[in-house]
Amino acid sequence: MTTWLYDGSFDGFLSAVFDLYWQKRTDVMIRKEQDHVRGLFGNVIFTPTVTANADRVWAGLSKKLPAESLQQLFCCYLSELPGEEDNMVGFIRHVFANKQDVTGDFGNKYVLHVSQIAHKVLKEKHRMEAFVRFQLTRDNIYYSLVSPDYNVLPLIARHFKDRYADQYWLIYDERRRFGIYYNLQHVETIRLHFNGEYDPYYHSSSNVWAPEEELYQRLWHTYFKEVNVPGRKNPRLQLQHMPKRYWKYLTEMKGS
Amino acid sequence: MSRKSNDVKRAAFTVQEVVDLTINFYRRNYIEGLFLSSGIFKDPDYTMERLVRVAKKLRTENNFNGYIHLKAIPGASDELIQEAGLYADRLSVNLELPTEAGLKLLAPEKSRPAMIKPIRFLKNEIIRLEDERKVLKKVPTFVPAGQSTQVIVGAGGETDMEIIHMASQFYRQFRLKRVYYSGYVPISDDTRLPGLHSQVPLLRENRLYQADYLVRLYGFEPHELLNEKHPHLDTDIDPKLSWALRHLDCFPIDINKADKMLIARVPGIGLESAKKICAARMHGPLGWDQLKLMGVQINRARYFITCKSKSLERRELSPEQIRQQLLTQSHSKWLKSHTTQLSLF
Image (cartoon, rainbow over all chains, first blue to last red; front, side):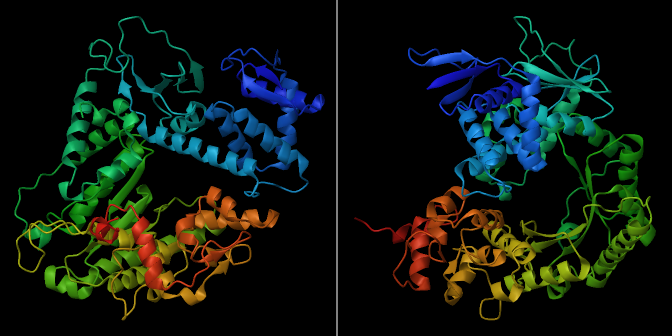
């Protein structure tokens, strides 16, 4: 068994798939370079990203799959699950091996798997669209920290751009250390450098936030508490919709 | 009764206060949208006009792209309701109680015909503008998320059958998107009502929603779920299972051949799974393992279906036996009373 490493980009993955077909290989595992732990055995090779090759694979898939399935495959990539590449390769092989559209072939384990992983990733996207909480900074940027289970920032950018087209906003993925920033024209990917003592979400120093910011956080907190009807309490359902791991980013749950 | 006779101090926001709060909550993404309701003060038009003004300001002056749901106040003029429809995604009229008898008993000052008038007006406007949109290019959006209504459950002594039949009639007659059932939360010691310490009927509410989904999306007729012989939904098991146990003669069905809507009637198989099954079986017959991976609850469905694999359940079981088996496996939080069925050894 040989392991091929790619640079972690989606194009890098597709380039490697191109090489699989080009070299007619079936004994290869494709892995992200950054995830790879050097083992004692086996042959490890780095495959460079060739955009033209990646484009050819994508164009081939686009001819055989509807847009929704293409998005599902991209979602699998965004899931960043270890070894997910094997399923994606299995899926792609199944697509190219069949004349007819395999989108609905849920009896096939790869087709089913891709649809299920995509479902999970899209669910996380949906959650993030709801769980982002902005704080207004003094320089008029609505700023939010998140750490989604999957890498969904690329998927939520459009939602926030359409929804808040007239305000500067920044959503930063703490875990993956990058963010998306909207400057009233378009969304760009950015990296932030925090200095040592800065605590990004419990920052109390008032010179960062707009003067009215604290008031609205308090008002929201009060509203959230008061709107509760004790007779209708259903903690299990609440946890199902709003799992605990998201609480530390939610203004209304702070202090609970 | 209810809100009116419930003598607590009321507070009112000014229009501008609601707008400021909403837009600031919205811009921080605290809220997806606004659900705005109001008690009637002065008269229906005055109240409705203020609700409309909030929505209009948010949309036209503050670039509010969130969802807006407004209450249409019975008795308000058609012009105001029409204007509300231009800014709101959804409008709803509270029906308060599921039956007219309940309304007479508990809220005699409110009348069903007055509630139905704005519902009918909205339905006609939605249809009229839909038709216009087919010919003309620029027709403003009008309540794009349609209209809904809400009824209180457990206050007026009505049966589940009356409630679901009423809902189904409103779905058909007025093209409502949703009927919401809200379990009565005790607020008064009026003797016509459940006492102050009675529990909110959450389980009943849950079962009604399940029945509502079956009628709205699964093609069930209300009388299949609820009729003179069964005027109330079974609390221990869900309405679909309950129906299936009363109609064991319709089962088992062959998952690899049956129609999609018939598959969706099987307990343990939802619409999504039914869709998946129908897409997948074109590529080859399906067995238990595949069904399980697709999300079918085999422990429930196995009594009602056959597939490529060998049958899991070959004994002839009575409805009561199936029910007991399923209840014993069940972990529902509603089922605290069923521990007695576990054997001691």
